[in-house]
Every structure is written in C-alpha cells, then in structure tokens.
Image (cartoon, rainbow, N blue to C red; front, side, top):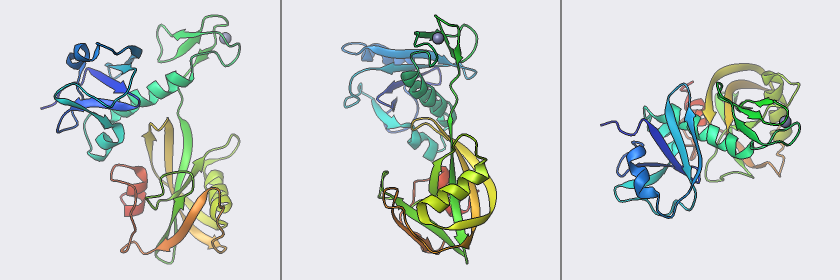
Length: 252
Ligand SMILES: [Zn+2]
C-alpha cells in the first residue's frame, strides 16, 4: 500500500517512514510530532506537489509505528517515492545553505512563482542548482580501478570522483581527477549515466574511461588505496541504487 505521497517529514536529513517498510509517513504523522518539536523549514516541492517539512531536534525517537530512514535507502529499494524524496532533500539542503542573498546579504524570501528564492533588498533571484560532479570507472585489460577514499567512508571500494570546476568540460574534469588522484592518463572518456544525489546536493555524472599511460601514484590526502580489480572478484562496493554500484556492476 502506498501512503504518504503528499508530505515528506524530515529530521536531520532522515525521512519519516512507516515501520517495516519505506513508505513515507505523510501528514497524518505530523500532529504526533508537534509536541516538543519545531518546524524548521516547510515548502512545496514543485512540480511533484509534495510538501516537505523539516522538524528540528534529534531523529533518535520516532512516533509509534514510524521510523527514520535514509533517503538513499529508498533509492536502493527502487521506491516509487525515491526521486521525489531525493529532490525534496536536495532542496532542503540547498535552502539551509541559501538563506541570504549572495550579492548584498539581504534576507531571501520565497519566490512567488518559481522554485527559487528572491532577495527582498536587491531583487536578485537565487535558483537551487545542483553541484555537478563526475564519477569515473577506469578500465585496463579487463580490470577496473577502484579506490578507498581518505575523506569518505572507507568501508567501500568505489570509483574515482570529483567536483567539476568552472571553465572545464566534463571530459576535462574526468582526466584531471584521475591524473590528480592516482597519477594515470586516461583516454576514450565516455558518458554512462547520471543521478541526483542529495548528500548534500550533487548531480553525479558517470563516465567510463580507458587507461592510457602511467603507474598508480596515489594522492595521499584524497586516496587511501587504489587497485585494479577483476569484475568477477570485487571487494565491498557501494550499495545498490547508487550510480557507483551501477557503474561498477556494468548496469550503465
Ligand atoms: Zn540582494
């Protein structure tokens, strides 16, 4: 049974869902949440027509019959609500970081028509754009390059990734990130797919590329380890639902 498609309730990045499944809790859970909780942000996610509400406090406890879940769990489970929940969380994260005008410092208010915020002082409109990042699966002699990142979760081996810089193409970014992080040159950079990832708000653009030259030389503050793996003998990789999983498994 699908429920709760009208309202998403968030707390500290987690979504309230019905216990034992990943169906969003919906507006009917809100009265139970009100005592001791304050609504930190509330807005309509358009064009989906879903209300997003963030309550303050800690997500340690949930009302009876409900539990807090990671939005990425909905993605992994291929929930019909995953795309809307990702958009709602991405917007929530953007709104939390864009409360004042970047030009004059004035307070931003809801734009009357668009999914945007407008400065009450100078009229500048701020749009919630995602941050583009590339993720690349480098291939050599039938093997793929996976790394453990120094700054991120080290329990998984995953593809190299990095943010797109102003002035470079996506292909330039792929070549630069691979060169900087592991010292390799790559060729035949080709687009594989994309995914919005609301942690905090990235558009992940996935690529494949072929090894062209160089030996592995790791940038220690970025990469803890990097090795070539046979696709039939993979280590622990990111969970299903992530674009990294699909890249590594050959799903895209
Ligand atoms: Zn302004």
